[in-house]
Length: 328
Ligand code: TYM
Image 1: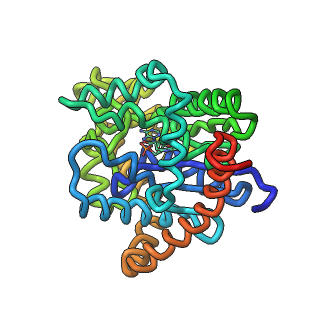
Image 2: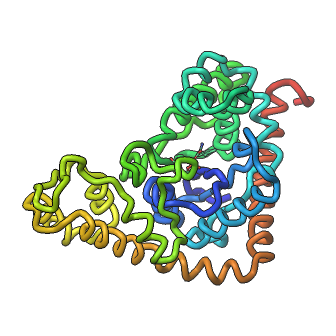
């Protein structure tokens, strides 16, 4: 352990990561990795609610690991691992059931949204934030960099830490959320947040023609029907994405051309697609190298799990002792 502050964050194994993951979270993870001691977890146990194919999950874990390494998270500098490879996560989550009111879980927006999609709601959908709190608190994280959609779960994590500390003595650290500057990245449909399950994403490892095929479907200002209609960049999701990925020097012109109908939406989207293709180019190149040696990717994840387990096991020894399970 060093005296650097600690970062923890997680991502579901949804396969290849998307632009929303990158702008909302990963970009900060990479920027912060030299200044903090980082723990980054592929949260597979969060991803088993509902129907899924086991072999498919394995591929999605692999693809997410490739995405993390490809954007520049370095296993030599950060601990990158799979949640289920460190069994302390589920153990602490169970113990947190003792201090978490059901009402607090039922209030979570993500629970309300997700449970509406099931005919019979798995209890793991309700208990999801307890496991997330365990992920974070096991590593005494100071800071948790996440997208805006995770803020509520972070508040509950702090509440669980406070309640547990009040009952068993001051030991768990209340982490701060560090919300990505891009805020909530909207999907290409412009209606909901960018999310793999909604099919409104651009994959960070997509080939240039796939990026264009996705971006050309993006919804723009609905009032701009004809090429000669002036547009309103402030309500256009394509413009919001430009501000996040296109060279800042080009933004005033993109704004101006939209307002004066000097450029059509399709051309504006072409510029956006080109910006995204350039942004992702180094990721694709690194991913090609990583995919050529899958055994090394799994071995790196296994080394990450060993490092994570060493910290998590210490925390659990103290937690069990404070909860009266082992002699003090
Ligand atoms: P997940 O897998 O949905 O997303 C991973 C990270 O990407 C961010 N993100 C977004 N940010 C902005 N706009 C979007 N459209 C967008 N989509 C995704 C998320 O905010 C997140 O930072 N519950 C978490 C995973 C998790 C976790 C944790 C996170 C489990 N345990 C502990 C932090 C700490 C989730 O489902 O993220």
